[in-house]
Structures are given as structure tokens and as C-alpha cells.
Amino acid sequence: FRIAVLASGRGSNLQALIDARRAGTLPIELVLVASDKVDAYALRRAEAAGIPTLALTPKSAPTRAAYDADLFARVAAATPDLIVLAGFMRIIDPAVLVPWAGRIVNIHPSLLPKYPGLHTHRRAIEAGDALHGATVHYVTAELDGGPPIACAEIPVHAGDTPERLAERLLVEEHRLLVACIALIAAGRITLDGTRVRLDGAAL
Ligand code: GRF
Picture (cartoon, protein in one colour):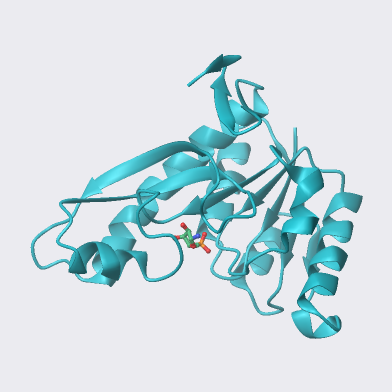
């Protein structure tokens, strides 16, 4: 099962996939790690793991749409079965997503549909939420709005800062992402229109 990962930064979620694959618990092939940032640490992690990389800066294209088309053409050339957005900090042109419907997922650090977009940890604290979490979902044209696959929850502690909350959540994100990718790679989770199915049955 061939996977391409798009990441803009640190790449700890990518690392979780690399580690699980190495441990033999995730039967996937990481065929490409692509980034919009030349200095993304995710690219260094990929290189260290012997995974092909692509750094493509948005300045390389005249428009956002042209950039997205170019990026996705290059990703498609690696013939992934699934694209994983793991800290990819760009909104993708919906037109480019069309052929990838049901074959592209994202991990977002909130209990969607709460807090799409940025600053999710701060927003959960400011709202006084007792629970925070992360969600893996299929990617559609709507930002952080595609069908959710699964989430991981953690309690918000009194006196939590966004940084502390993010740090505790990250551990759970890694487990959640690996678990979701394992189900997808095994063909057990699929997207049927807007419905997520487990072993062919609607969830
Ligand atoms: C994670 O919190 C992920 O949920 C969000 O961006 C962060 C990426 O972290 N989309 P990393 O680059 O995987 O370490």
C-alpha cells in the first residue's frame, strides 16, 4: 500500500508512520514525502529513512492553483494509493482534490467539527472545554470539514497552556494516525460518497 505524505514542518506524525513501518506493525510503503517548505524537518526525517523527497516552494508557480496542480502532478507521479496530510499548512485548490476523493486524509488537532483551522489548542482552552483531541478525516473542498474517520480524546487539565496541551495531544495523534492508516491500508475503511465505511458497512 503506497503512501505519499505532505508536511510543512516538524514531521512527528510522519515519523510515527516511519517508526510503525519499521517496527513491522504498519505494512505500507512510503513512496514520497513532499513539502512546501524547503527547510521542513519532515524532509530531513524522510531522507534519514531513505524515502524520496520533494521540496516545492509556492514561489515556483505563478498562482496558487498552478502551484497546487504542479505539486499534485508530482505527487501523482509517485503513484500513491493514499495521500496523507500530516501538518501540511496550506489550503488545497478543490479542483486538484477531485481525482483524490476518498484517497486523501488529514490529521487535525481538534475534535472536529469543533475548531477547524488554526490555534485549536488555545481555542479549546479559552472555551473551557473539558476534552480536547485530534481527528483523522478524509479531505474535501471544505477546510477540515471532510468526513471524519476517527478521533482521539484527552482531558484538558486546569492550568493547561496551549503548548502543554499540544504536547500531550501529539502522543495520541501519532497513535491515532497509525491506527487509521493501518485500517485504510488493509482496505477496511473506505469512503463511499460522503459516508465512511468500516468493512463495507456504513459507520
Ligand atoms: C499536528 O498537530 C497535526 O495534527 C497538525 O499539525 C501538526 C503537525 O505536527 N495538522 P507534525 O509536523 O506531524 O509534528
